[in-house]
Image (cartoon, rainbow, N blue to C red; front, side, top):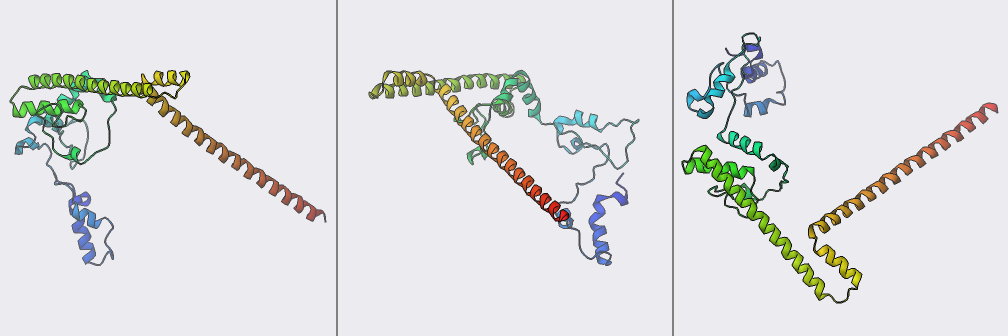
Length: 266
């Protein structure tokens, strides 16, 4: 059953046009153009599923279940619950993060370049971009590629993508470790070439050259501490200025009260 005419959003523009033509309103509402450009969605009859027209065939059982209504619950006749939209990769993504919960805690970059917006080829776990890190989404997309293009079963495709994910993660960690060792070796060679250092400075630089990540973290922590101290200093100055202003206001009010008292006595 369609919504009653009084509450029918599909007849709203027609009602406004009729009132404007009759001179009942002198100006159109501010939302008139927006509603005309984006009219309400077409009313879906109660109980109809999109699978009847060939759309979303994978989620037909869920749609039929969502269309069932509790007869004990009263609802207006014009209210219908939209069917649940399910995609094939939802179950794969849920299974991956269920057994790999720590992947959700890995930091990700929100910076997007133009190359990141292009469609990627998921014939391998890297998606055609070996310079990027592999994530759970890489497993999902590679699994879908194996299912649709290689005609593998979902279980086989998921296990294949998972093995490729583990192998790629090991290769990435090995490359990162090699880069750290190369940076450490370069720092030691630079230290050996510098002859103007005394024993204490040489020992200190040699200590930190063997711990590049720790040094980087401590430098970052020191910068943040300095920023925090500067901010605390600004806050302290602002509080002191506020106290000085309050003191001046109290002195001003006290002088005026004394002058008023003198005038009354005179």
